Amino acid sequence: MAKHKGLTFYEKKKRFSKEMVREIFVTLFYCFAAVLVAFVIVFAVGLKISMIGVSMEPTLYNGQEVLINRFVYKMMSPKRGDVVAFLPNGNPNSHHYLKRVVGLPGERIQIIGGYLYINGEPLEEGETYDKIVDAGIAENEILLENDEYFVMGDNRNVSEDSRSGNIGPVSKSMITGRAWFRFGIGGESMGLIK
Image (tube, rainbow, N blue to C red; front, side, top):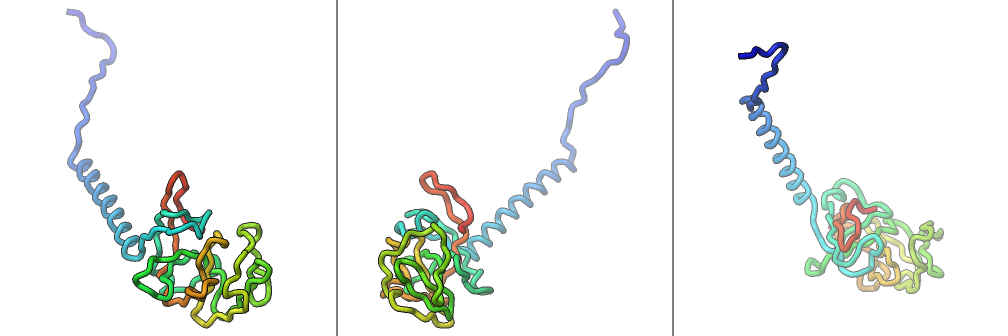
């Protein structure tokens, strides 16, 4: 019988130690707990609604689902540019409207020549929005009360918003929360709402 000269290597079988199995289960438990806590927070503070209509295109599309942060306006007030969800006239039987805040409490709002004026000065919006065809009730100057906001859709000429006599300025008590996340629809991207 011939003897092997030199080094020989033996393949050592790897075994799971009790510590390794314990670490795996602890890691899985923490991952599950983190997902559960995130889910509870989002759905306790948030509300999922669907966009109805084309009034917020190109920001939001008809049928697109949106998460609403119901807690944020308990700590602070809406800012210009926020997309808010509200029930028109506080009617709980209505669907939520999603519109952008353009006028803040105490401001004077008017639409002149197809452009939005705040306190007598045109609001600088760049080329983002079309020229407004129908000024509605904002043809005459509107003074917003201490808790009122003037909201408009991004697709200005097909939006029923604060220019409409049946909606008008929106009080803070009618605002459900701020839209903060949109889900993708028909190839559209999902993500935070700006």
